[in-house]
Length: 125
Image 1 (cartoon, rainbow, N blue to C red):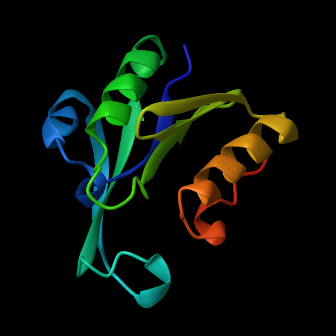
Image 2 (cartoon, one colour):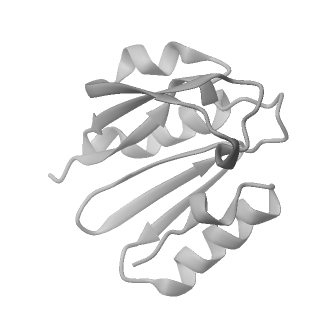
């Protein structure tokens, strides 16, 4: 089994209960700057997480329902392993084969359509 790793920004979660259900490997605080486009926050709390392969789909669904709705759905979370990448938006999940530029482009277009700055959705195979 190949576990997934990724980053979840705590402030992106409307419901933070999901953080109790996953393994947090490390946490760092980042000061918010203008290019982040989250002016209502002063900092981001970034949790590097590890998710077992057999729980990844269920966790992705929970994260999707937990992401903050108050700010135009402008958040996403993601985690990946050697072969697949979950990119999770509020009410929409992309399950991407990591060699598929087409699938990555679709996720990127969707993120930009939500108003997420392009540099933050620069996914690539």
